[in-house]
Length: 192
Image 1: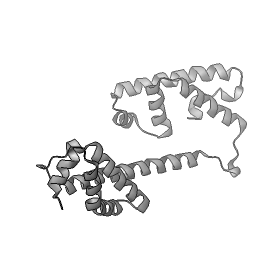
Image 2: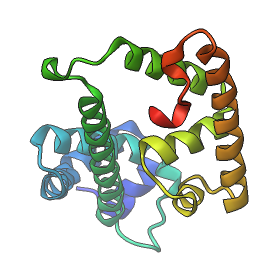
Image 3: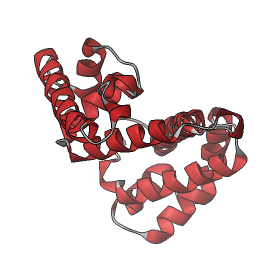
Image 4: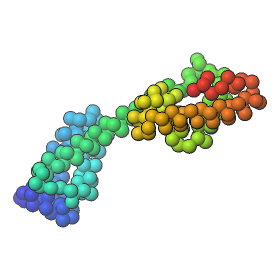
């Protein structure tokens, strides 16, 4: 039986058999860690597979002076599990947001309100990406200007300018459309 140091050397040299041996030797430990971090066995198994794929792809980054092969694999597994947790949390937030936007049969919307929302969505789609993103964060995620600056990495003044210009564009569109429909003369802030 070869040592982990020899196994790591063979892995770094691109020996696919070394990857199989590393999996046979350390796969159970990686799976155990993934199970401890994740609530689903299927997710833990996926993370285990992703760990060994990442180990193969990044095999030249393993440095035996910095730690053991098992420690390196567990570090990769931990990062992959955290990525999975974050991804799952993001998916749940999106699902909750979509569900919150759905209209239940008891709350049938007025046709004018639907038209208002469609006009706003259409105009948002026409805005430059950064303006659209800042408006979405401000109105749909209810973030303050400093929070938007933190999330986007934009300077606070730029965030304020994007929001001001974006609202001006929406308002102009609203006024043009409002000229044909009295229901929309109140402006975009009603829907946003």
